[in-house]
Length: 381
Ligand SMILES: NC(=O)C1=CN([C@@H]2O[C@H](COP(=O)(O)OP(=O)(O)OC[C@H]3O[C@@H](n4cnc5c(N)ncnc54)[C@H](OP(=O)(O)O)[C@@H]3O)[C@@H](O)[C@H]2O)C=CC1
Ligand SMILES: CC(=O)[C@@H](O)[C@H](O)COP(=O)(O)O
Ligand SMILES: [Mn+2]
Image (cartoon, rainbow, N blue to C red; front, top):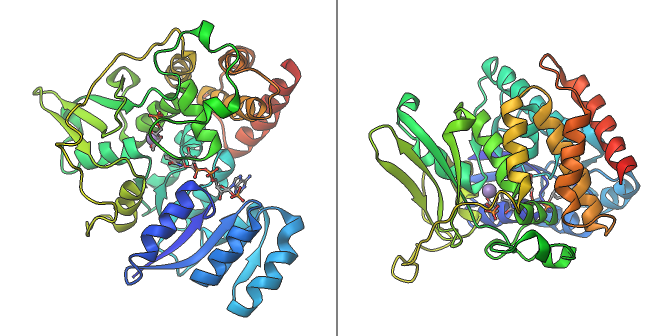
């Protein structure tokens, strides 16, 4: 029986993880869950899974959740301290990090310090704190098992392989809702249009990231930290069908790929059960029905965010953090109709030009930087 904390249990990844667990009750026990402000969803999850702890980030909703949770014996906490607490519980084996944004950084580091295995969906955390997280991992028995579909694919393709034999990691990208469009056609696209992902049903922030290709940029940086591969050997290829979730090209010319139905419950199940594999919940891939797999070069001129993320990654130090923080802020502004779609890369570029890179930094420096970059972005718009 694996005992789990799920950070962000009310989101797209969190609810799909609970769906996996619901179907595999003899394998998993949910010890703790968390939400930002989705109080009704959180209360339903408390009723169904009766966890020992629940965290509601929004302090104004604490009493409402407490009132409902009492009869199940669930203790209710709030704030970042609450997230850190449930990530370090003695009786938890694995923490699924499925909050959105760099808010996941503190609890992820706390979980690693407490020796918990991490099922990592929350890519922003690794982008912002990759170097710090790797230092913590060296001192801990914890392992990171990727949940992001591309990194789960790479992890599976690299199983048992010698990393020295890697030629290239090849990340696949759907191309998002605006694949094939030019800049002149993207001037006036609305958040609703950008949220319509062609293949995946995901949270709002990652859906916008997919539309700008920043999602793939963040994933390039995520892959660099997870697999220790140079940026020059991490390639992105557009694969509109999203059936091949990523590939590894080895020095001898072999390419290994991981294919499965386009459903996040597959990589979630893989990470939660790792190193086991049990029966699929989502059915088996029909290769005859999916017999057309195509590939294209990404259009870097139209989708500038991908190049910006490569630049941030190659610069290293605090630059990936600046890139991610500016992106988080810009996406929020776009979703609130405060800036246009094509302003997103402009804002990120300005932030990356403004903030000097620092190579020797700690967690406090990152949070100070977070405030400064967010403030900068708000003032330039
Ligand atoms: N969705 C997907 O298919 C994939 C997602 N990912 C990554 O997984 C992560 C989660 O994505 P997704 O599930 O789509 O996101 P969602 O927006 O659907 O869910 C986010 C979760 O985090 C909670 N949350 C939001 N803001 C805060 C905050 N400030 N403090 C604490 N908790 C917060 C939300 O609570 P509430 O419900 O109350 O708002 C919710 O539980 C992201 O990093 C994303 O990039 C990676 C691969 C695929
Ligand atoms: C499901 C998943 O892992 C997402 O990160 C997905 O890859 C997004 O699609 P894009 O390939 O369009 O970014
Ligand atoms: Mn992905």
